[in-house]
Each structure stands twice: as C-alpha cells, then as structure tokens.
Amino acid sequence: MYLIVIAWLYVTLMMAVAEATNTTGTVLGAIITFVLYGLLPMGILVYILGTPSRKRAIRQREQAEQAAWDAEQAALKPSTPPDAGSETPAAPEGGGVAPVRKEP
Image (tube, rainbow, N blue to C red; front, side, top):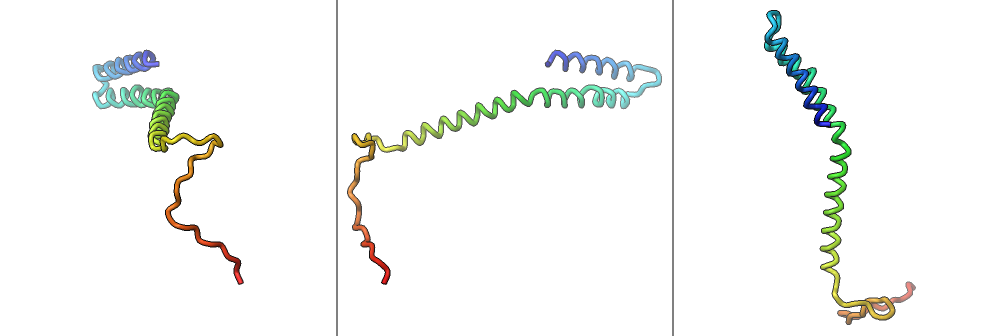
C-alpha cells in the first residue's frame, strides 16, 4: 500500500515541479496541484485502507485491559476455597437477624 502512495506522491511532485518551472506556471499553482492531486487523495486513501489495522489495535488494547482487570479481580477474591458442597464457608454474622412478623 505504501509503495502506491509513495509512487503517486512522486508523480504529483513532478507535476508540481513542471508547473512551477513552466513559463506560464506559478508556484502557487504548483502547491495547489501537489495538495489537491497528491496529499489530499493519498491521505484519504491511507485513512480508509488503514481502518482494519486501527480496529485490530483497538480490539487488542481492549482485550489487554480486560485481561488486566480480570487479573486484578482474581487477586481481590478471598483465598479460602469453597467447601465440598461448592459453597463458600460461612462466617459468623455480626448482629442478629430481625424477626419477620405478619402485618396486622
């Protein structure tokens, strides 16, 4: 992809040089030629063709952030293993449970 961009910019640079050195050409015309025929179209082309790699980089960054968050959450979990019934061991409750009563 970059070979095409470099080749096209070379062609438009030569067009701009030819316009600037022509007896009826101007430097302003050469600059406009280079920008409108060279830089602008190639900038758009590179942006469009670079979209898949940008999406891939974003996806990899999000996966790395998710893995770091998962590792952080795993480090915060208690180290006591569950009992044989796959339940976490019961801890003593701090305070009594309020009784449940029927409404009159």
